[in-house]
Image (cartoon, rainbow, N blue to C red):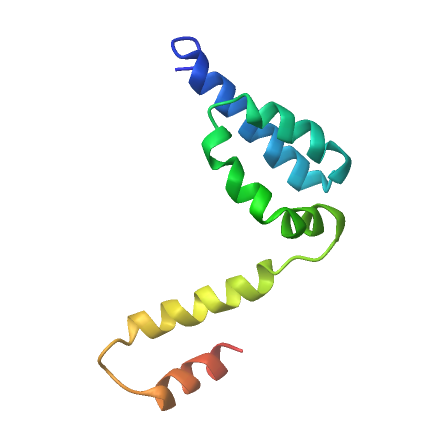
Length: 100
């Protein structure tokens, strides 16, 4: 697809750079990435990045992640969906505590 569509290739390249920047917490590369993204097919979505620029920079500069919290929330929602219509909060509490 990259060879057939330069637009897709450009979008893929900019997305990979963003992923690498986030993975390595490289806040120094943020301004250069914004310039590249402004000339790419990602440009219409760039307003969302700029609106949340403080949050993006905090994610790039700070070592913390809420991944573990999100994982626990996902597990609780999955348990709740499995029990849908069967019981109330008491059974959910028992299943959560039994797993811990």
